[in-house]
Length: 285
Image (cartoon, rainbow, N blue to C red):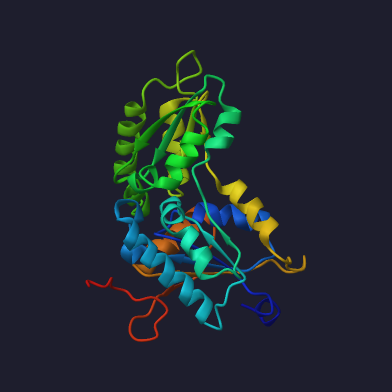
């Protein structure tokens, strides 16, 4: 980052892989003069098929290291993963009460505002759907709409690998499992994309469900909430910059950022060893 940008601490953003780029895209649109650090924890993905203890441990490692590294020290953190938010955000906030931490959750409330039939499909990982956070959210809105929740095993991974054939096949399977989609009585007219990876399959999904069904994700609301939580904003001068890191194959993140964000920057491979930014291999004890 240039010398002027170094005086403004970046906003940290992390996900289990490339899915959080959908949140980063919304953040850059809302806060174009801020600097960002994006971490894809691809070496430990997918979070949605891991247990909560594992996800919490990874979230803590990433957060601590972003705060410890002087050259990366962040002013705020966006947990750009529904599964990690459900498993870890309350404890991350306890660990770091001085740090603004913004999470994501499936956009059930915006979907209610859009739906006319009152039947809403929710596509998400099992980790998100099984979490107490999601169950509480759904229960609090149960009188306002009927939610048809569909776990989407393998879809985030197919998007991560940009396997378009597998993405399309899984989108077909899971939209069919939700039931009748459309704008008629008793049909599902709104589909919540409850994983930050899924907006990158929106083209396939929209083609399957038809133009009358609304797809809803949480990028824009998260970006607005991040703006509200920042104590100060960068001067409206030069555009902000973004650093990318991955605990897995850097090429996957680099290609995804270029494909979906038009962001053509090198990706730092998270180093290994004592004092490293991120440990590459999970502990077995």
